[in-house]
Amino acid sequence: DAGVIQSPRHEVTEMGQEVTLRCKPISGHNSLFWYRQTMMRGLELLIYFNNNVPIDDSGMPEDRFSAKMPNASFSTLKIQPSEPRDSAVYFCASSLMGNSQETQYFGPGTRLLVL
Amino acid sequence: AQSVAQPEDQVNVAEGNPLTVKCTYSVSGNPYLFWYVQYPNRGLQFLLKYITGDNLVKGSYGFEAEFNKSQTSFHLKKPSALVSDSALYFCAVRGQTGANNLFFGTGTRLTVIP
Image 1 (spheres, each protein chain N blue to C red):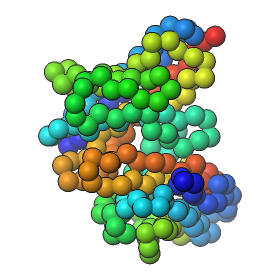
Image 2: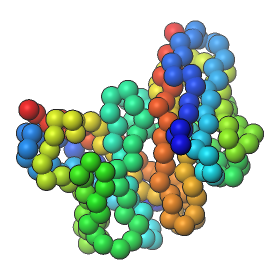
Image 3: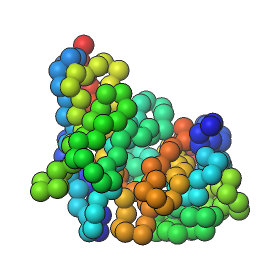
């Protein structure tokens, strides 16, 4: 299995631009999680989906952030407009919900720099 | 509410010595507990988990963790540290019963000194 795939791996953009981060979960997994990691705030859960349905988006910083999961094999996290304080590493993770198989498997992350 | 605490930001240990990275938890209901490791510029990697059963859980790379219900702790241990174990370690607990999100600690940076 290829594991969780994220793209791009690195993104540099200017303030005000739209940024779209992409994630392909492990095949067969039915839960998907988006996290943000910064030195100041550590690892934060932004949103997660079960069976393509958003369950908890209370971690999404503000309306500039949105996430979608149109099907079981793809999710996007969009920031519009981006701001310098959004600079962080964004991780996607997936898991198989149920039967105690709660282990989350993380992608390599997207390192975002907003200038 | 579920939460974990990692009281040490940094742990230093000499190569070959035993290591312990501490974690305490707070949950309502039975705890599902996890340890992850993060190497530089990488995503988090699953090390081990406690769901039920034996209090001593064995995981990847020779790590193990001991679940202690009375002390609400889940400390990560390894009998003999390697320089390559130097990394950031995260403890996590599953959300409330019926939820499958994880709450992560703030992380402990382990440095193994040659």
